[in-house]
Length: 299
Image (cartoon, rainbow, N blue to C red; front, top):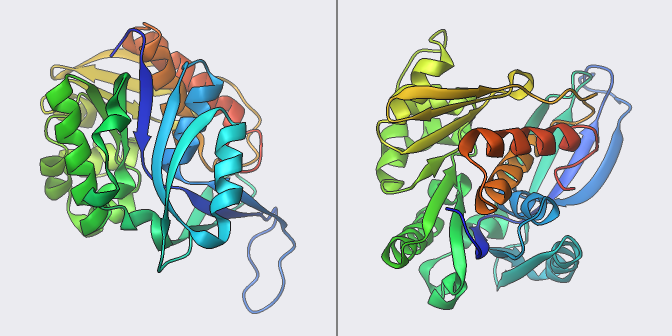
């Protein structure tokens, strides 16, 4: 996964409505909040952070609605990403409402809209021309058409010898799909980037179980597993054992929306520039620390 070449991200572009409310939500009445409408999406966020932290060329394939296509395209181009946005004729761009409490933790309300309507017809082999790595947003695997597209992209990358990573994206959606079904779908990927909850779910281990055991178990199926742990940093597992533990960078958190995406972008950019997994995880932690100091999920 090292050497010159582009990073291709296949994933989601959504419109984020981020509401930071210092006080608990008050049912049936008003709660004061700072609300912003921002470009987002796990795949798009990761692409933007990768472009910011050093990757020479970052490409993104995603699907959006006509009503906001130009706004999203401009935001991506301004961030240094080369977007290929398919305009959906039926659905609007996906929307996520992020409710962010005093502790900077967020709860999502998600309307996937056009984002998970990517399909194999949206794929073109030329997207991989000159690419050194393919990253697939885990959200793709939670709908039939976008999962089919992800499988087409994965097979095409493997045929060309292009390495592949996946971020499982959502513990809630993983429960709905089924962990084993997800693992079967991502067979052949080189890097898995779950958070703690996703790692435990995918490893089939109960919540109190140490996340290190979950990471080690998953690395028997995927060559490199990097588990993000928020303020606890990240764990790296290879060939059934923990090979590194990286501390988080200190930060005054305002909004944790997109912190995992920032880690992914920073990690992938560093790997493409030749960093080993531990060095890349430190780069990911630096990006995540910066991400939580600002509202929204982009640089």
